[in-house]
Image (cartoon, rainbow, N blue to C red; front, top):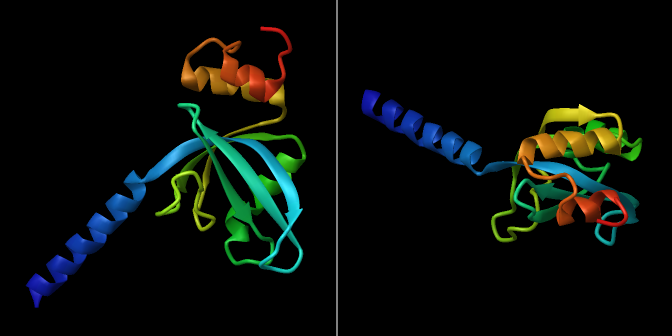
Length: 142
């Protein structure tokens, strides 16, 4: 009996460790409202970037159960706030899409895009005038 319990604990622990290991940190580039073909009404497409310059997206539907994981982030992002998130997971078969069932944790929330630029720059430790950030934050001429 004890062997079965120990094996179950080990399996559950390995699954939890694997799930945590597959999470990543990203910041939000943009949120767009659009209509859904599969569900009635409004959905949000959220665009992300990791600190290596890789881009991702996800779709969040306010009528779905997982919207509670994203609601605060969506509302505040639409109001102009910026976020750095952790604990987001990629879809198993599409490595450019973040799983909508992720339970993101807010690492940083800032009030405006200028503050977001400073925050991102401190995380990635390179010149804020680099090409990636020029495109994201409309610096104008390099």
